[in-house]
Image (tube, rainbow, N blue to C red; front, side):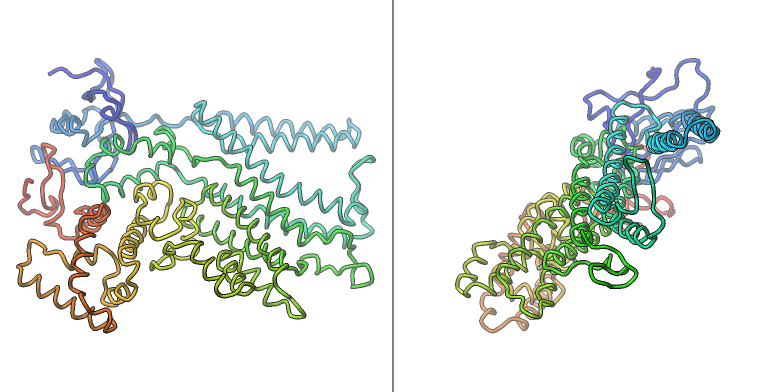
Length: 616
């Protein structure tokens, strides 16, 4: 039997395979006459592999990758059955990546930094003070940028990696400049700070005769800079999660949801393009950058800096130790000026920082989130102007301030409240009816304000939109737990079919039927039940629901339930949802589990428990 002398390794989980590229698979073999090499074996299926030969056992967990323990013997030599699994794309044998060499660029940078710093210190006795200070500042900027590039650059010098990391670092520098230099320049030009600190034309100078001004303005600048930069810095900290981890997690969810794929090569062939769009090319699996434009982060930082300066700048006021005419106290520097715009901005910022924090904890923080924050700030400012023009604040504006703050969370609800307050009931009713006839996501259980906002970023603003959305697309674009997404879609399908019968939906929920799959499961006759058992179960459900309904809704209840269940049973969503809930990949009974045997076939049972395995 002849085998190829060399083969490029199959991709890791989620990579583009030979089958997906239209090439026949080749059997791996070491080059002729070459010394023994290390090998790695990887399971490309969601089920364990168990092969027994001559008293020895070869086993791999689902999607597991492991180094072959022997370097003097290829894996297929010890277990020839592995060649069959390789041909069936159930197993991959490849050479592990070479060990990472020491980073010589960082070593060179450290030596250069030490030598340059020593020369700069020695130049203090040679250069004038003016030139020595500016040379030190320029060297500090160059050293900072160089260190940032070295710390975040890709170890492998691929051109597209360099472009992405350069863009990443450029955005980080621009964000820090906008969040620090912008407020610093505004405070310097618009407050009494320019009387204490002189930058031009006589060089940098600080007047120490008024320390309260310097300390107060520095504290004010520090607070504004931190409040402005915190959302963006959380993104750059979050962006350190490896893309390969996200790809593998998504792969496991696909196996459970889609019954038509059985190996990683099947998933790559079917969803490969979507996978690359969401997580980059296969070679980016070791990278630490999510895809997408980062310009929304810059825009959000600029908007937040402008907002904080607007409410805390207090241009023209001067700092004094105590309150006197024409002066402000030290503590009042961080006291925002009360107005509707001020509290509307604070409400939007509170909502935005919570949204970023939720995404950070869920590892689902994307540039799109920052676009949401920017739009939310602009919307609430417009609403604040509208409230100022339509509401009479009077001597007690506290309620209006609270309403403006609440607009940062639920601007649509505040707008509807303004309609009801200003317009007549008839006009308000027509506006609300024409505005949106769809069911809101608040009708679903287990979904909060921030999760609804995350779904709205993907164009899902109603129950109908969620019910018709592709689940796998949500798996790609969000990092909300897959089980939670499946449950929401399952609920949304039932709400959509019972949109005009709220009483029936409430009654079904009262007896534990809260999703479409629950209703189908209670009305469909399973194979293991007799017709009498199924009829008794359905009659019990029918009587329980009937007692929870008003008398007017009890007529034709049997026909309605059967028609709704039949429509759900033939819908396009129910198949994938039921496959997710009943997949053998999560089966707790060892007798119902499946594994891959010697010839690549599926066997029933758990080979670790010495019982008879059934070939299926």
